[in-house]
Length: 416
Image (cartoon, rainbow, N blue to C red; front, side, top):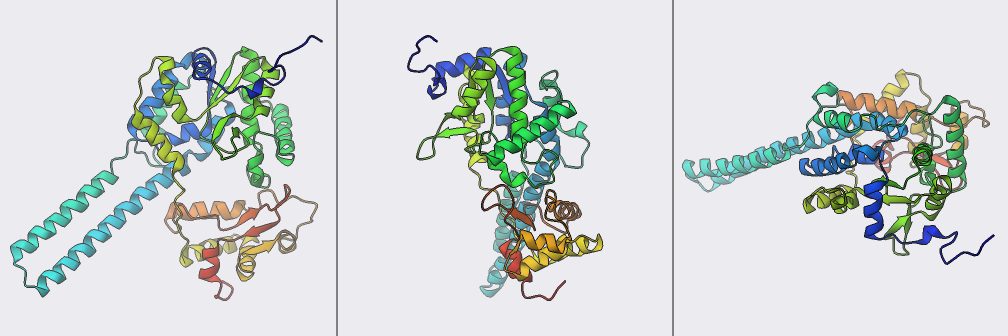
């Protein structure tokens, strides 16, 4: 074996330059992750246009793994519904505040004997102010209802054109099973990518916690077939994808992923966030706006809005679970009585389940019923899961938990 140099066997430690990224975007495979497609519903119209124009400029080398499209369709409606719910809630709050403000002005005007003309002017000022706010809230770049025909979704129409002949084939059943098993092995041994999704091991998803690995596996296959560098654009910033400095700043892709792609293809692997793609858009001859970068960063930094449970909403879920004969209702009640948690062993007892069986999908009925009641308007969108598996150590849930707010709401009640 011949002698090597400083980077021989350590290629993953190279910190990429802007020129490296430029060449990769111009000549390599450009892949889009699920979150990039879904976040298009969250960005403003200009940002959407900028991102899609950049993707269109790389159309001949654009690639989307089959797993990404599966996840996109799985989550699209809930993303749209959550955005519509937020807009509806804002409109309702503004209408309520407008009424209360005018009522307060009317009481004050009466107490000081304000002339009717001045009172009318103040009322008009309030109406104009709140009308302006409601109009601003209603300025959604891509409006579509979760239940509307897909033909009415302008974003889908553009994506359909962009992704024509770019989506990879589905794995065979045997390949898929092997990939899922490998994904689970990686999660259990903290091997990237995907091990940060350990809580999905017992989820009701067909792939469990292996979704990220399925995406990665399909990228390796495509990259190996084409023999080119790969640029994956993702909004996922978890540590099982990214190499970070001590203070958390992103340096680049995980060394393990860079090495794995190099061994599989002989080429380099690049990770970019959507904002980085906009910043490097000139490499593809596309002009973009700084405001688009700021909009993408806004969505990235936005903390998920916490919508609180109400007692009536929680009772509605429990009542429906009871009517369908699901043990999960009893599990939730006992967890509430215990201050918000119930052990894994106790769940097995209540469910009359042998401990040799996995609890995969145990929370599925709760999520399904919650979603059904959300569609009816009985449960608000954005609430935390009413029953969630918690992983303290290892890859098996240690216990199940109920939101603390639900414990406070229903903790003093007798069994529902």
